[in-house]
Image 1 (cartoon, helix red, strand yellow):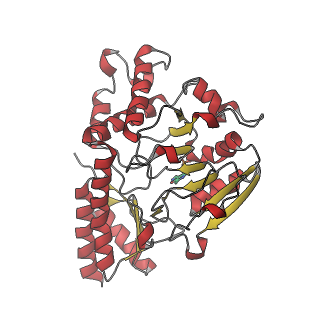
Image 2 (cartoon, protein in one colour):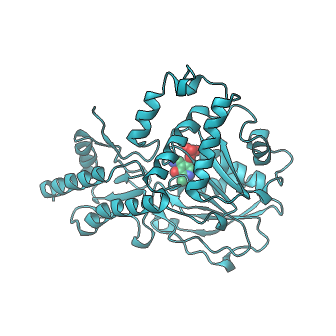
Image 3 (cartoon, helix red, strand yellow):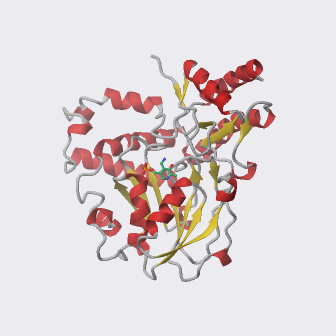
Length: 359
Ligand code: PMP
């Protein structure tokens, strides 16, 4: 079998045992005589799949009973609109702009109310996370929105920002289930599945129950969290197969030892790359040290042609998708849960060799 080390920012690698299990069950799931792709979502066999996926995500993230877990479609980008549509009451919300996706979320929300950017790290091309203090937040804001891990720039919040009594909403698309988070500190957590959870097409929303029911009257039904919660994510056909694969991923992480263990693995794995970057004479890390992401590691040589040469040479060796996003340039190694430590070790070996030949 010829699998590459895929450093894509998303869709990205899935755990091999998950792919193998899905392959083994592809044409006949659990004696049903059909693929999960072919199943009606309103049958006991599928209901067991979605219920088990939810139960396992709850166990993994320690999600309290007063939170709903929604399995939706439309990607995290749809939530950029759903968040203000469902949460605005006073019409005011505060946003932290720490990267491209939080900027998009901020812009989308402006269609629906009095939306204020309370902190922005664009002055250093988003290489850090701005410090948030309670006094920066408007006390009558309905929520504060943050992007917890900035996929493009390779930064993450070092701690949960302090917003006082104002509800905290976090886009965790690129860090969900990579380490434990205290769900109770958030009113809403949302994430596209295609990095740490499964295939694209599934978006997970975790929302505190008391926040439901405040949607604008003209909220499209499909974006109405209350409607989706009341129908157990089955108002219409859910992304059935993506939920099934995400369920296998949740089980895989649980069997590995849960999020404490995942964090330990991810910290060790990321340290291999960051330690090398800190000592390299050719490669330089992009994100400031205090805000480094465990999931997306950004780096440059400082010479665009050399960056290009590196990406091409890496690809030829089976390290694919290491090219950085165009707004940062250079390289980005996305090392989500499913990237084996060995993949990072081998990438670093290759980088050492490239440095010796090109410095
Ligand atoms: N937020 C973050 C942090 C992301 O990384 C992405 C996608 N890479 C998005 C939002 C947009 O997600 P989607 O493509 O699922 O709409």
